[in-house]
Length: 52
Image (cartoon, rainbow, N blue to C red; front, side, top):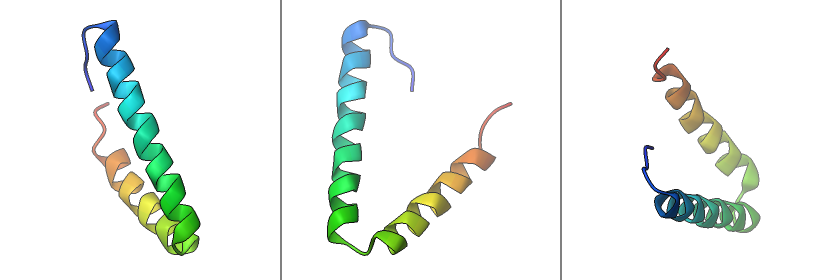
């Protein structure tokens, strides 16, 4: 993501931190193996779309 100001960067960082916390809570409550497989599958699709 592209941001222009320090305030925007801080807001983006806070949003990412909150979402990572939610993923950690879900991993504790759910079947962690299934969640890990889904996250890895989603991240693989992002790697193929990167611009070189």
